[in-house]
Length: 508
Ligand code: HEM
Image (cartoon, rainbow, N blue to C red; front, top):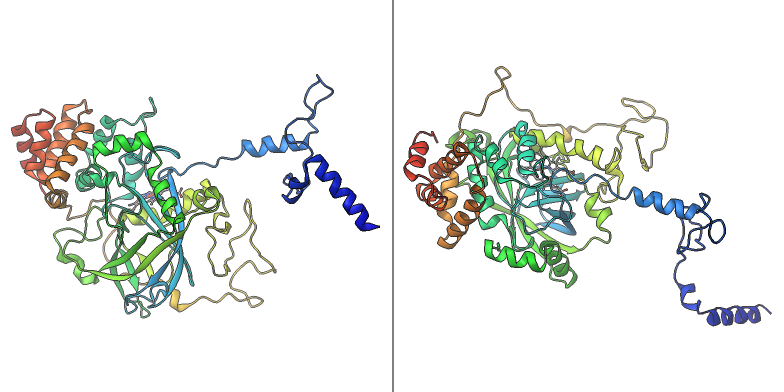
């Protein structure tokens, strides 16, 4: 009897052409209830108004109205991938962090990004590129939030909002204006090396796979006795480093302004998994004074300090949902694990606050409960409630200390101790060495790369209208390297002798 009815029903479905639709899960509202009609709103009669009681229509519009969250204030345009990091070297004598114990494999999520323009802006634009890695370690999440270039524009976080305002589109035109950019940077001689690197072809990488990454700052590795060394992290691309020249950018941008995202996603799709080797440079605390520059100054590379290989990262899985995994990903230099600590670098110290703070606003109070950000270990803090809270908190003890439910602290997780003396102050660092490394970088470039740099930089500097700004910038590049400054001045048809005399008046 039953099979007769079933045969009758399936014959009806076949007749109505709905047999195929039956296999697919039905369209539902957010409460799980099936939708009757997704093409026509409910109206009062054939010609009457749309009804407020069409709950499916109302919910569909409400959810659409709320689809965007604020984009990142910088690094809005990005793309991410999952993978793993395997330790092959041995730096365990320097750090108690489990992520660096030999043989350890740690899942990672990496987000690459451009910096200045908004989400969906062309990936061809000149910029540093972000290279942020979240390590889901067995002791909690560690984020290494770096860039492709090894130095930064400024050395103190107090300058960051002004710098970004000058680089972003102008508030009166919504267009980026090199005259504003150099108006700012003519007051920031320490930016000379970073500007030189950004205006070289390293400011326009051919692909994210063919790009190195750098932690930029000094961090501390802390051993199990509380002793520490200073380190800089460097991701060395196994694909090599390849960039686009000014002429190539125009043709790539005309064809595909998403070339960086497309390249990474397609490579992973076809099983061509990109790899990076992680290296560290190591300095003991008493070595910090042995350089002409301050090794805790983020505008400097550690010239002459050997690199030690630590391990290899492979990216092998694209996100299934860009919004959930890449846009809601929240990387923060404050996400550290025992054995890895910040150095006293003034830029890094500001970053320790800024990222976690912006993410409480950009994503929300419980940003770290989202699957992409949640650690793979249990969280047992007394931080609670807030919007969109979905954490599994049970029991009555949401304070510490307690005998009912103790939450012991661990000596192995104590911060290292830094010896200090003297008074608080507001003063710039003693060893500024603003120009020397910019010159060393310029001289390390091939003839073609120098030609590209001069053309790229002259293009933007040529839009500066104020002559004091123009000559100040030219004097900085001349101070870095006389040939560099002279060629730029000639390209911009300015007085080379004046540039030289301004440059001679600068101290290094
Ligand atoms: C993103 C601030 C310097 C690399 C961000 C964001 C902020 C910020 C607020 C947005 C974060 C978010 O919405 O999730 C700062 C401040 C700096 C600074 C205040 C200096 C004091 C640097 C430096 C580097 C860097 C030196 C490289 C070493 C990045 C990267 C991202 C980012 C890679 C994007 C992370 C992602 O993909 O989500 N920065 N930044 N920033 N910053 Fe910085």
